[in-house]
Length: 144
Image (cartoon, rainbow, N blue to C red):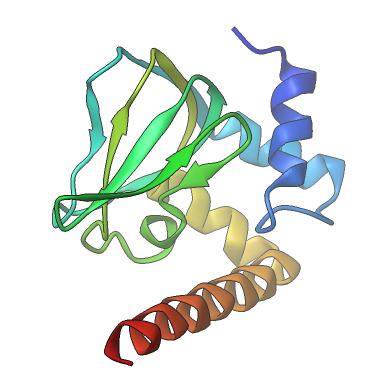
């Protein structure tokens, strides 16, 4: 189990949360819970509605999109940031490759934090725009 200090350090390293005050990071942490997934377990499923964000504390997970493995994630990496905002359908399946521990932040606990912190809201907009551009660049390369 990660210590509170370790969790705060990892949260602060996430682009969505970097530059936030220690007080705000503590509020995010207070609205999160540690979840454990055994190797081989599906954490989120592509096409299913999302309800939150996972940051990996320990272990590895594979990201599968359209049946193809597209990435491997490890400690400090994360997935589900779009679900924090809209609860929309997952864009990929994430499966624990090893035993996996994540810090889970649910949408309903996160929304009030964003409303109270315009700086965080702006960082989310910038981060998601960057992701959109990367996705577009990737799909443009596939068309070439």
